[in-house]
Image (cartoon, rainbow, N blue to C red):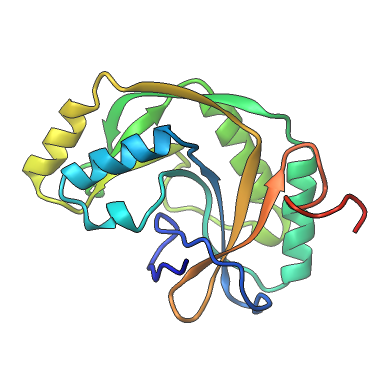
Length: 199
């Protein structure tokens, strides 16, 4: 299933051809069902056209050029191998307004774990300077009217859900504007989901 997109907040789930040097990398935590479906329905109700295209997720690394894919994969695998599973609780809402037109669900429990995971990922081949401090979140409204933004912030104020994070997805952003899943990495292992250990 291919989803043409423009940034890491809009990933696709296609595993295709070999990765290309110089294409960008993204790493995300996917939100599991049934939480994902509920957040997707809420996002659609706020008039966000990306609701049907953007699976709910927490971005760990966004749009970072990869000049050496083998080294990038080794690095991300090493981080995953040393990472323990942790619990994430999503609770209430926040916004990046007026800097950017985004309303999100807060990451409360697991916030520091996401920050530390981001810190370890953003090293070596993925090291770069960010414009803003990293803030883990799940977007529920982006670039819609102010009234819809207000509605999103109010409607999900009492939202709360928890899940266990066991994997993270490594994505490639290619020249066609599509994010492609390259590996779903299991915490505590040095292989991708579906691979045999030592393969």
